[in-house]
Amino acid sequence: NAGVTQTPKFQVLKTGQSMTLQCAQDMNHEYMSWYRQDPGMGLRLIHYSVGAGITDQGEVPNGYNVSRSTTEDFPLRLLSAAPSQTSVYFCASRLKRGWNTEAFFGQGTRLTVV
Amino acid sequence: AQSVAQPEDQVNVAEGNPLTVKCTYSVSGNPYLFWYVQYPNRGLQFLLKYITGDNLVKGSYGFEAEFNKSQTSFHLKKPSALVSDSALYFCAVRDPDRDDKIIFGKGTRLHILP
View 1: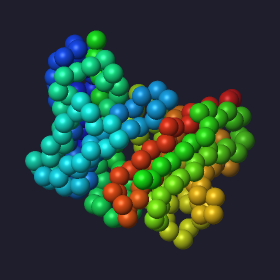
View 2: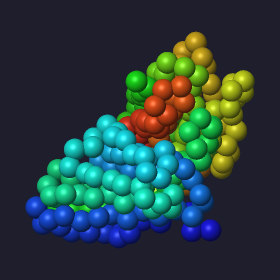
View 3: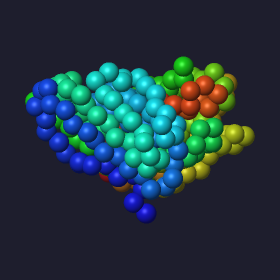
View 4: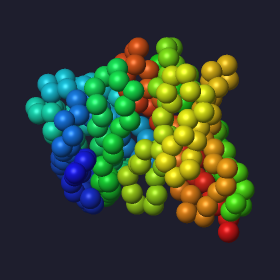
């Protein structure tokens, strides 16, 4: 089983550039989310989705957009990259709302904005 | 909103000694609690989760967690530490009665000394 797949693994952007971080899961999970991990800050929730066509903001949504057109895919878009968005990004998925199910994580995307 | 706190940035334990990594939480309803581990340059791996009614939960790699409702704590424990347990550990909480997001603590780095 592939689980949660993130691409790319590494990326360097120039300030002002845009890009999309891809996330796909093959477990038919309804719930998907994006986190960023920064030293001393733990994981902070950026955006999440409880199903296709439904998205909502997390703790740190500014500068990021998401969409959920299919159950499998949940891309994260950086509209105009800033150095403050240098971070490691993790995508996670789990079974549906209300069930005591654990989240499964991708391997992460390390993004550097120069 | 729910929150989770890990009061120790780092914990050092000698190999073979018992270890404890602390976590306290705040939710409005019944908590869904989780522990994850992160090895260098990897994603998060699920260790264990709280199951309603079980004050001592057993998980992967010999870890267990003790739930204490009156102290709103969910401490991670292991009777005998291994050097290979050295990693970053995250506690997480989900409040299914509210917005169902999973919120993570800032993480505790565990060093097992040979």
